[in-house]
Image (cartoon, rainbow, N blue to C red; front, top):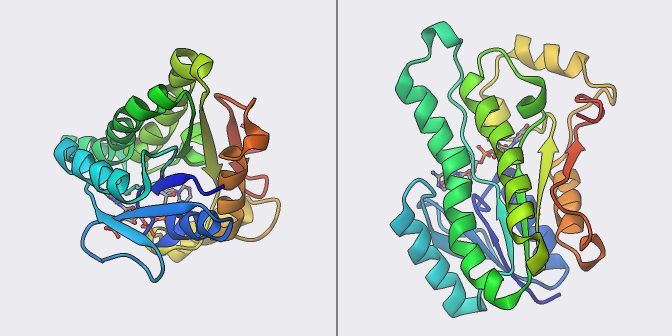
Length: 234
Ligand code: NDP
């Protein structure tokens, strides 16, 4: 405990619950935000994950305050849903840039010091739709399954240096993001969740803190679904 943890998009939603869970167990937690400021009691750095210079500056700020990042949670993400036939190239690339390339940018910056320390924990917040697919989310689902290939390649490259890279795949969790879905789509999703309810942000956070713990040191390149059975283990 007492590790330097960075949660991208930790200013609200799932990221905030993750940040609070690490803080509660005694870690030094930093969250990124894009102007909202940091939530009470958490150290905030301004960072847009679509911009490498912004990522670099944020890491430098965290390093000055808490030391090199030992635990990285790539949580920042966006949606821009529409059917393939209506999706323009910008809608596709913007979502990929924020969700997947953004995760790559922070990983690349973090692993520099993780390699020196021969220790690191990286957790990607993917989604059940990365494995199941989802109509209207070709861009988002592709970005989320991309995280699995990324985590597994990093595991192969850096697994021998004390670094783990794992994926948490949440199902439906009530946040600002899912607020954007139509009532009809929400009912449809809920109807296919064996648990019969949405997940909570704390339930996602519990899986993330576990994968970042010492107890999970031999878990690498894994995908942990937290979805009430929606993806049935995929
Ligand atoms: P929210 O919309 O509530 O929060 C999104 C977070 O990402 C915000 O903190 C936002 O920052 C940040 N963010 C977005 N774009 C950028 C960027 N370019 N640079 C830095 N930060 C950025 O979403 P959730 O909390 O619901 O989602 C968190 C993660 O969980 C996402 O990756 C999402 O795909 C994933 N997920 C969510 C599910 C759900 O049901 N809610 C299900 C499965 C996965 P800001 O406040 O500045 O906008």
